[in-house]
Length: 187
Image 1 (cartoon, rainbow, N blue to C red):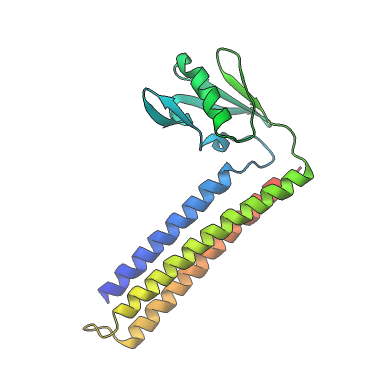
Image 2: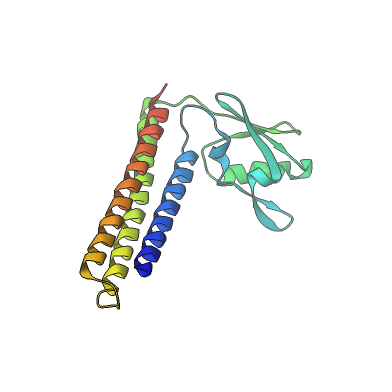
């Protein structure tokens, strides 16, 4: 029975990681307003290492369509600007010597539809990872067949628990997608 609990815990952890990753990826997709999370994927060369932008600068959204990046070390401002351009996020940074401003253009309906498709793709990838975790857990449960103290009924119950976990995490991903779609389509 202890083996079954370990398998269930591992499946839950794997599904939880998939949910968190999906949430992080959805946060990178631009919705109607500027969000500092949109720049989470930007890496800046800093003292010989690639560092996340938020560790070398303060990223804020002072207005609904503006991002402001204030470097902690002003000597890195050109590197930050280049990293934003190289990240190919579709943003044009403006450097005023003290900080970097990014003005986000208003989104067209066509762009909103494209972003919804992108969000759905991210969500589907998350669901695939959850389903793979289910399959791995079910395979591990089947390997327990014939072990001391593990009956067929216990394995069936374990598979039922894995399915409940899977259904719950798929629903959470669907909820994240619905919220993101609503954010994107709101003008």
